[in-house]
Image (cartoon, rainbow over all chains, first blue to last red; front, top):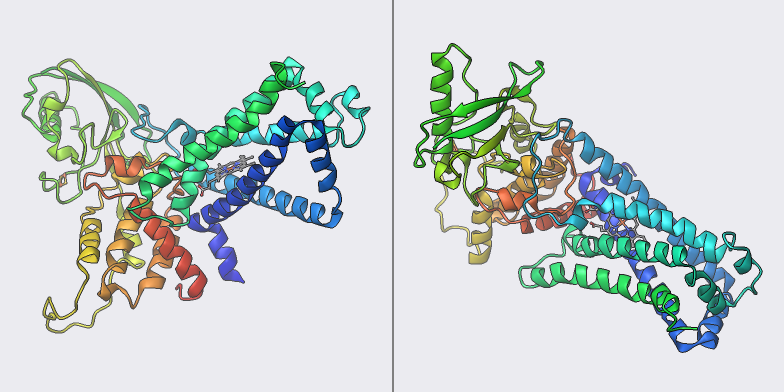
Length: 221
Length: 252
Ligand code: HEM
Ligand code: FES
């Protein structure tokens, strides 16, 4: 399988893996978002959805395993690509300039690291429930109360909003970028693709952000 | 015009370089950027200082010899223009300019503003050609080529190999260069027999030379004097993916 090894170490192969794992992670985000938005339908809706997820433990663990694998692969290839890119220009320019690269595209590592830190915090907060004794004391499936308790605290709400900004930026470059990486490019569709990245990326971030925001502002209680 | 120049000076490949400041006086707005440097060099020669070394040849925008980062932009501020075709009227009187060599691990500085671009030659040698047994040239119309393909191949073939794409890329990647060379041949019938090994070999040579990975920021196409589009990079990705999956072991 040396050709696999060679392909994964090549610049395009590594980027293709980032694109494929990026698609998986984005797919998860969209599913997760759809579930979370049930909070606006009231406590029964979201709590029974959360309980429903646990009804198929085998499927749940399969999904978790796949997600973790995709996540680790995404990080590993991100590290490989980033290190190679830093090494490719040992001497920096005295006068640095940018013609058209977007801010989001130049800060993928920064927004990625914010997301990584957030994911650890988010799991500790709502999955392992170790950051807040009041949440630890709640019943297993009272997601609704858990969210209310969490997002009424200004620092927690702020942390979530910051993470959503990072997701919006990461995806606004990432989604447009993955089409190019996979070679899915045609003059007829290119303008649409470069437009879709920011729209879908920022859209996902705004919809996610609407949850802590509306709880913090008291629209959901 | 009068200008203040900050220029990278470096004696040889192993010497440590530094930015040195010079005043450029009596510059005509109708001079090209290289002629402006010629004037500065004449002044330096008169005072016994070593002139600033920079690459140039045709001075008409076709050979790809000239280079230079001017205020952080490859070939200076004018779109679709090589440094030799850039005129001083693009600048303001009294402006301060930072003039640096291309910066990339694959392009080591030889002296002052001159870098060694033979890495590009080695990438071409790895696959940027078609193997044809010698004989009389075939009639040009003997092999039909779709007009769209001919146009696209022609646009890619406009690449003069100057290296601006590498210099401008935040990752010092040579993907726009490789994509133009792979693109022009993969679009034409003559390029088909070696299509798969070409893309695999050229990409692995690019990596060996120490160039970075494309992260789709498109700084390259923005500075390319021949306006090669980053669409060729998507085509390169496509060629690489299909060659890897279909013929993984055709590589040398
Ligand atoms: C939920 C988590 C994440 C999602 C949905 C996601 C999504 C994506 C997508 C779709 C791409 C585009 C791939 C391409 O250009 O072909 C990408 C690229 C990238 N991601 Fe992530 N990512 C996530 C987490 C992270 C994390 C934690 C890091 C941490 C370092 C990271 C670093 C990067 C880098 C460096 C790139 C390359 C950017 C480029 O090539 O332009 N990502 N990501
Ligand atoms: S000197 Fe030939 S392209 Fe500028």
